[in-house]
Length: 303
Image (cartoon, rainbow, N blue to C red):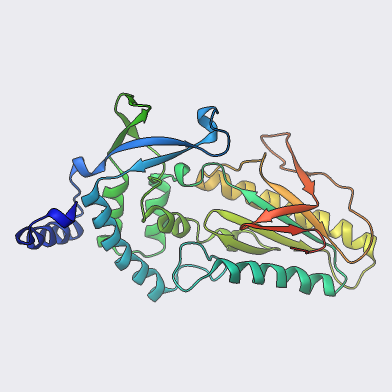
């Protein structure tokens, strides 16, 4: 639409965006959204198996892009994002994250250690972003108030309607989650969860946006049976810490898609159950292969 905008209006837009960043004000009309639901797999499915896509106002999208440039520069200069996170970051590639992931498992297996990798799937991750918790986390990270106030204004007082085959729902307020379709939502999400890796001690964490792969290995220098017992303890500690972080950040875990894979040079598979201690009786499945970042990884690390 900006192609047909007279050049005389560009200076007005510049003043408008600068005023928005300085005063942390966003026009309410910019935050009104039309939402469509795209099926994740089957064309006929319940709402829980769809992906809500927000069709944002064009002026809002330009403002988000301008703000994102400044916000990324702030994150880079302060080193707030961990190197273990490769999603939606400049100069970080998916293939590099995959190779680092494989290298860590190869290194542990070369020392004859049994390795358990848990692939964690967060349920509707971007749609579960907790507004108040996000603002509080950014404040604790030392984000400047000028950035913080604009983000808070961007998050709050949003509303949308859902359109399916030409039929529209009523308008309703959005109390949680960043709009999928926004260029700013992924960066805000990984910033909100930038401390997840440090909260999961005793494991090697690999992140790509909302994908988490936690690698644990049995203690070196003891026999294989004792290593497997030690690995079981480490896995349970990991699950306890992950469950605590999930509750603390209001970021639920999708247990149906969270899976575990065992890798070892020795023949044999540990016979222990992987399960969260509180709130659920669902068991995390052991698998022999997993599609990680688009690549099918087997327990023997073939791909």
